[in-house]
Length: 46
Image (tube, rainbow, N blue to C red; front, side):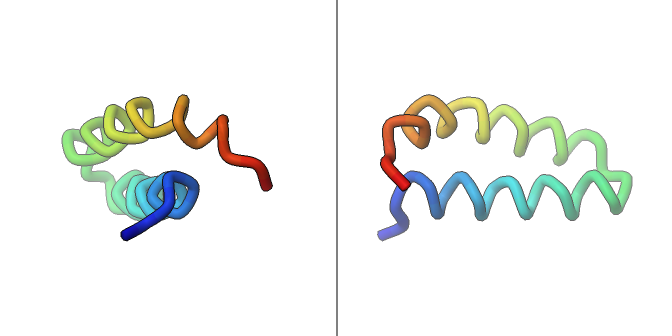
């Protein structure tokens, strides 16, 4: 199972690829997923 931080980084990488490919609809969907994960990722100590 992925930790919250690893999941966040994975989604961010996927979103970047979609943005560069010009797939706006899927990119926006990934950003929404990132927004759901981000608050939880903030509580992780690095």
